Image (cartoon, rainbow, N blue to C red; front, top):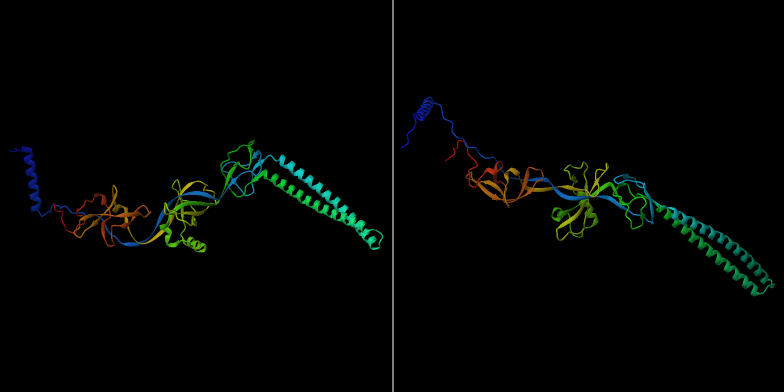
Length: 393
């Protein structure tokens, strides 16, 4: 038997008296009002969502700089990271030996020219002698033997002239080659761009096997990445003509570039090439997107993300708040005719906007689902209450 204290009994009596008084005065006691979960009806729509691909940047004309001649590196005229123009001097190699070769070749050319003059003079004398003997032979003054000897001398002189001319051509070629080698001692940039790493120092011995640096032609930058063939398969067929491929690439939308720090590059790019073969292991194509780089903000070798907007028709888009992820399952709660929730397993694709997902399988158009608070819903729980409906315990 429970014995109540006098104080507790007094409190209970006061509470009962208050309730009776309120009822007698016509004041209703507030009832618990049920609250429905927010729901949406799934509908199909056409959307454009961004697909992201990891990419690596490369200058459109990255050029490896190596010397054409061997020698001592006398001067490095640029620094790493420096912006250079086409034709700007980068390195200077000791040119003394090359200069001596030019001088020697020019001396040989002068000697060949002198030999030609002597040969031509000899040929003129032989010609005059032959013509004179021929005239005398016609008058029967000299014998045929003398005429034949003068003719042979003339032919030999003509051959000497031809040989002297060939020697001049060869000597001139040697001069030209020596001058080219001398020019190779001054190494200029073949493109406008940015200087890469310089692994050599002034005073080093260099040869055509030595890599001096790389000039990244950065007026246009290329982002290389892999893209699944299924994404672009509607416009690509095996063996399609180059003109058809060019037209297909031209029809693709502009692409964006997101840097490694998450900032978006201010200039849009275009997909400019696709490899002609699909990688059998990955089912992907190697793709190249080209971006303008007027301010030199992009650097060769940098990692980035290419964003390609993809259009899809008749897809079901729902908010991320409607999706519950449990281990290896993705669920949404479908509202049944009796207003209870049923867990439905679905497959989804990120819509790329940070707030929605695309339902691939599991739902149909017209289905009603819990859109907000799905994490708080349990299987079989009533989630929609009609006006005036009370919660049943």
